[in-house]
Image (cartoon, rainbow, N blue to C red; front, side):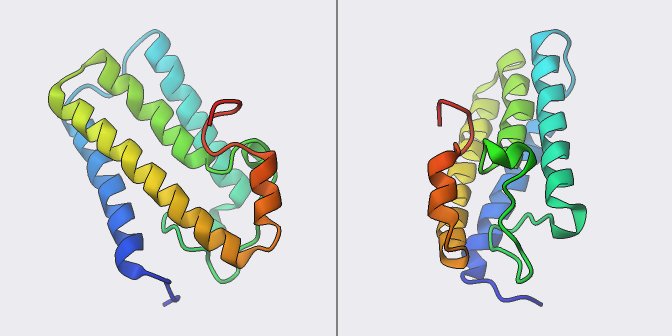
Length: 148
């Protein structure tokens, strides 16, 4: 088993992420037509591209870098530091917009907060691991090109 810097933080962030995504899937329809479906397909495509670029064997849901990890700067990582988080938001946000309820808005808000906390924690760990990570941060966006 690999060493995690703060196992409680890492597992809590992942647990909240999957609990909120599961809650969103269980509280309303998954597939729509029109613009929301296009965003969902874009989210799925971006997520698959990110996983393929990272190589399936190095894919990691825990924010802590793996011992054999390398700083990936190809594929969607050329522009986004967290394309998998972006893909999650592209998929789940239309679910709430099309079938909104207070519970679904709360779950989406909690998911967004969790992903932001997770990416900030992950970036702190990546700065410790990779000397060139601050340069990479200067050239890329966290989640949305030209916005954030």
